[in-house]
Image (cartoon, rainbow over all chains, first blue to last red; front, side, top):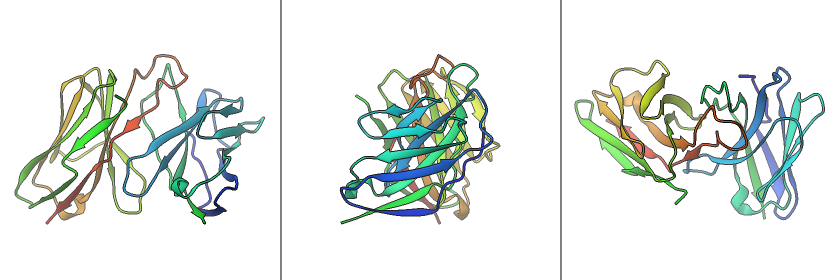
Length: 113
Length: 118
């Protein structure tokens, strides 16, 4: 699975959009970008994933660059409850999947009142 | 029911004790996972069960012994642990890895068992 690079920490004001970047310059054609987050003392939570098109769900939006070497997770209106470590993971999904989630160090997002 | 439950929430054990961690899901998922998470570190995969068969063992020491008695249950038996094994142990499940895309591989995590080895 391709490696990812994320900033160690970020701050965001409550109510503003949080934009979390991820670099994955060695991503392969059959690898997806996944985002999970882990709120303190809880298990990780799936947020969103995508291959090459932008994706949106009730939690967030995922913007993947055309060359797929980087992506941005967008929380449109951050709340205090969004304070968590956000993990960007690149892996093969579906057929050929090796089941593994390999977590990097992630980004600690702190949402401030 | 979209929940993965883990018991106990906390466990303190001595190095000579034998204990077990339990994980349960009723989402019909056929893949189940054990992860270990040390303080201020990301989770690390330990074991994967697919259709109740062990499919991945990430070179975990034999003092950790997983068991999948049925498709809803996953146990982790602990014996002769060391203080450095103290960590948060997370269980997760997913539908059917290898079957298409679009969320089939999404893993649902339980809240974890915080283990302290004295």
